[in-house]
Image (cartoon, rainbow, N blue to C red; front, side, top):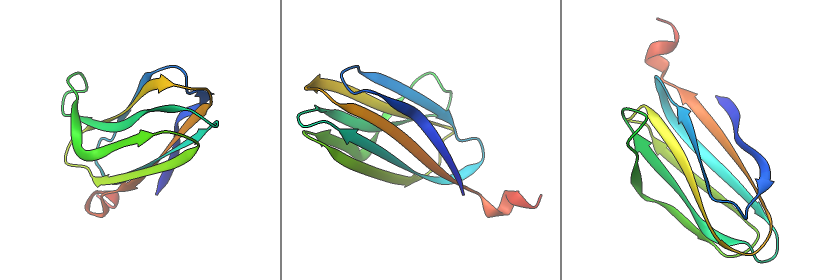
Length: 109
């Protein structure tokens, strides 16, 4: 398993997207850590085959209304993963981590 900091700690008062090329990776888990008493927004995962046109992954959206940790995971049947943070209000910080798991059938080939 590989751990990646997808988005280093930054102010949560700015909306952003962060893309990751999963290549042949089989599954993943994201963890977003929100700090601050009143930060609010929506954290969601999106997928793409071409790396340009992203669509929301069903059931992978979290509304944040205060300090929290959001964890999302999925099997990857697509090449690109994108984290989308849509800021609404408040102050605080956000850090996003990504843990990815290799496809065992490809590891020893």
